[in-house]
Amino acid sequence: MSWYLTHTLAQVGEDPPPVKPATPTGPAIPGKTTGSEPGTTAAPNPDGPAGPAARQPTLFDFALPFILMIVLLWLLIFMPQRREKKRKAEMMSKMGKGDRVQTIGGILGSVVEVREHEVVVKVDESSNARLRVAKGAIAAILADGKPTETGP
Image (cartoon, rainbow, N blue to C red; front, side, top):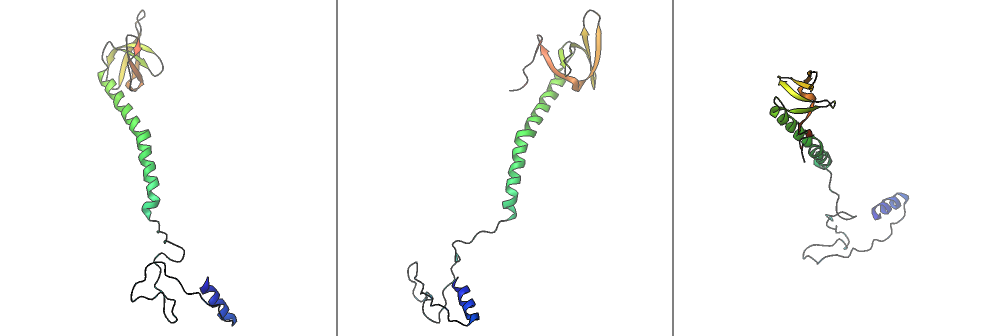
């Protein structure tokens, strides 16, 4: 503020107000001047006139929240999906002739034949009705008419 007053008053032609001598805040260092004597300059304050200098933000400061969000997204969404996919693949590999299954449409039946991409399911004992369904359409393998335990 005093610099501003000094220069604006100098432009108008008035004398600047007297500057009070600075009082040292720390212990006196021999051989150094405080800048209060006429004709001497004060040592620059490393903290600046208003306190500690603000640190300039870096790219890492801006990227850190996004990195944390991606890690959180991975942990909350992709890891459980991966676990479920692995569990379903294990279930499909264990499926064999005679197993009771339930399709995603809710149809219950017994496996008659397992092919590469499809399963033949017998849905009616009396009429010997059979359905060909995709392997991915099998929702669960049933044990004693109840779905097997699937996960935690």
